[in-house]
Length: 435
Picture (cartoon, rainbow, N blue to C red):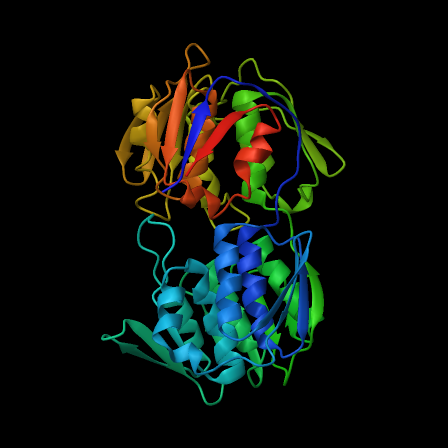
């Protein structure tokens, strides 16, 4: 198990460029299985979750070519359908959360797929009902194999239908879209997720010959087609990494420029940090975070305490609440963080309390942060990363802390952040990786 050794108190300055979006990469790589022709994808992040998915496609028989410079070509002309029912496939897919999005394209193209209950972050219940219910509406049948712990899904003929999702699940929406593009007739998905990741998936599929309308809304209409062809696609910058860098620069920065952020696809992320009292200057498609001697959280218009809660897009993404919570520890004022979607995501705050943060964990979903206003620093401690986003939040805390911190289980951070220690060291951080 690898670790980071972080010497806190060093200010960051300079330029940093966000990686390609992790969540988009997982979706569009799975979508390459919908065609036998080559699909070339650029700006693919070099992170553990994406690399594991690429290796899984290679084991499935897809031709995978790395062109360097974060560009890959995928060709699924000769998939080994026998491998898709093997114990090794079940084992590999069970260890990767993104593998659940193999369901839609494999079912749409081959009409039969085995799917293990996927792994990923331990942040609470992450049910698959939306995936299964939506695809069942298209005509699929599901059988659970308790001996081998996987679901076997079959659909000799997929037919389009009006589908009202029980929740605006991003991966659930992606799976249903990928199954529906090759279904017969018209599919309408209402209460669809409309995150930029979903928009990008739909645009790529349309370039491959699909017929999807309503993109960027919560009502998607999909006219089924017989086949899809190859295309080229570029992944957006990762808005979660952009938000993470904003938080780092506010707490530890002496002038940081975040380059090529695709500002128009950041939604309310910049304004959320501004409500924390953080100055964000836009320069074309870059954002600049100046040095903050302090930042003050304002109340709501009625004078009540500021609160941040996650919500489906275009609301605030839940993946940034951990970062906002850490940034709030040095703000002037108090903040309520309300994590609605995942009941285990706030449990990392006990580590911040041990570092000296003033936080009241009200219940599994809510925490009140009483800002230090930079009157004193957090203290370096030995920490463990429980998931990707808590891991980066702890890294931000350690960088601002007095003394040295040790973060173990950083494989969780590697799942979502590419070469993070080298990129932050280039800005002035003191981070060393230990095997």
